[in-house]
Image (cartoon, rainbow, N blue to C red; front, side, top):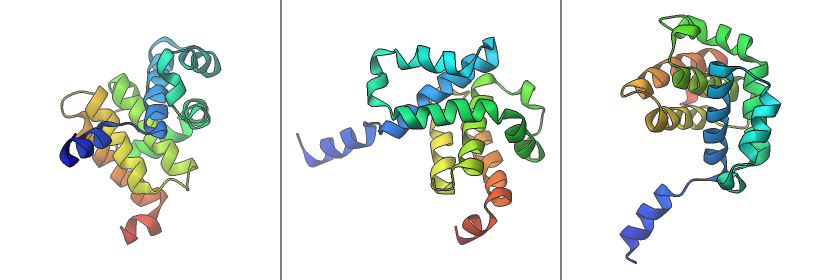
Length: 153
């Protein structure tokens, strides 16, 4: 294997946190579309064959935390949205909840990481231009929630 091939493979390899975010996205999508208890959804997703590669604690924190804080998160997102959260696609809605949750409740996650991870989720699972929308919304939210960090860039 060449060095270029190894670099490409490393880029494609997903971190345990990325996988946790993907599972949290699945869980929030299910919660938004079909309802249910986030803990029950978490248990169902944790039984998935690939779940062992995810950061289980981070997954639960994102899924259960974002679901519990959804009204607060949607209020923080509202000034940056061009429509009501219920009018968003469920994927973009869930991605924005994850991004806003990380910005608001996980100060140990750098704001750029929170935004970039949300954009990557939107690219992988959302609509064609959804990642641009997610990026624009979360940039504005980060400027309000973490002004000092965002100013430093």
